[in-house]
Amino acid sequence: MSVLPAPITVDIIFTYRCNLHCPFCDEQPFRREEERRPELTTEEWCRIIDEVSAAHPLQILFTGGEPFIHPGFWQMLDHTVKGNMRFVILSNGTLITKEMAQRLADYKRCDYIQISLDGLEPEHDAIRGKGMFRKAVDAIHYLADAGLQVRVNTVVTPESYTRMPEFAQFLETLPITRYRLNLSNDGKIKDTVPADMFLTIEQLADFLTIMNPLLPQLKKLSPKAGAFAYWDDLLSWEKIQDRTGHSSCSNPWTEASIQPDGLMAPCMTLRDPVFGDLKKSSFLDIWRSEEYEKFRKKIKDGLPLTMPECDGCKYAYYCKRYCPIVCQTKYCRKKLADCLRKRGIEIP
Image 1 (cartoon, one colour):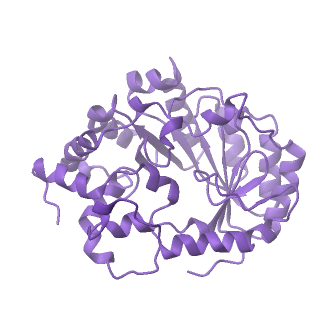
Image 2 (cartoon, rainbow, N blue to C red):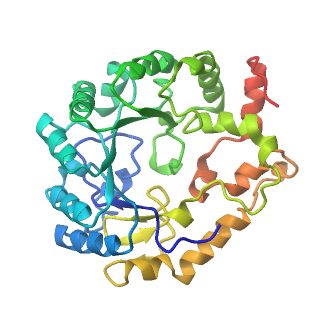
């Protein structure tokens, strides 16, 4: 895969701040006083957005923290639209009002808004706080009523996975276009997330087994994303064995991520390595840098398999071709396949 002249999407993680304190959040470590890094000012962000727009990416994805908590967010959106870029916002939804939804729609440059909803009301509020479920659902309706596309992202936990069939059927009734059922393990470094947030491999097998009969009915579910990416890997492994030199993740070639302090990394999840500082170097110089290209080559060539039992495993392709951070936390597909077979699921 050849590197593009500029990324298609630029993730802007412009604040660590949030009005909630979810235990599985990527940003939790950066909110600790001893690890906190200074955030760019609104003026610095607007300068960077103007510079990014000159490179002509198609889309800016705003995330945090919680975007709507930042006092300069609307000013950043103004610069994004002025630069002829479209935008996406990832939000917990709790601060969105009818008026804000209409203001977002009036830009006429919004691809979608993603709202976090982690289960039915008891499960969601147990994680995010009392009353947060209702606020998030209200936000979904406000945004849809304003004519915006809305997606939902869900983190499946040991406390919620058995109720996911009921929750998925509830999501089908909402005015959304798509939803993902993600695992708290995916993309998380284990020592920053409490252990009780992770499904065991047995629980993941149980989750996939109880969801399997419902899949034909779930029209809005992303069927090959989140937890179901593992399912798809197991069912389609024979089709990809000859795709040498192909990475399962295209982000290093199509996407860049800017952190709250101006450091540039491959994506919003992988914060290390960083390839440059936008306070000191230009956006395109970093995108085309030798360090960035070395990283792309490393991902393309494949990551080393560190356990002896991986030798000869038919699923090794996925482990070699996955993003480095996911490789630290992902489930062994061979063990997952064995667990599913014990539950009567046919796996090639």
